[in-house]
Length: 161
Image (cartoon, rainbow, N blue to C red):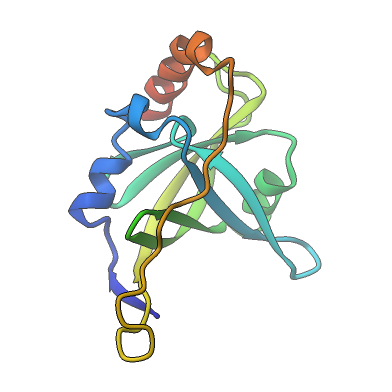
């Protein structure tokens, strides 16, 4: 059951999104939800290499410029980010603006500003599911990631400018 915890990132989530621990978060997925022209929810998978906290109220995103996800954010300016990991579930709702259509270090990506509007935490209801918790988040494997680490660092650095 989710509950509103405020309009800024709590400490643990802020620390996760600072981009300081790329080794630890390298295989974890961040889900990004937008709404398409037909009113359908549209999900996209991002990584911690494409999302970074500028501060507790502002995030930066790198998404494929030509994707439906980016188009949806351009059109309606709203998105929800889901951070799901062991014993951790957050939904971050925000307003999104495109800063640039092509990033210098990764021209296939648009650079977007995400202003945090609401942060919700979710957990099993102890009354109905005592002791239940989220055991893990979504992960992915990318065998080429170690060689791409320099580009990842450049993307995160450019997102903060």
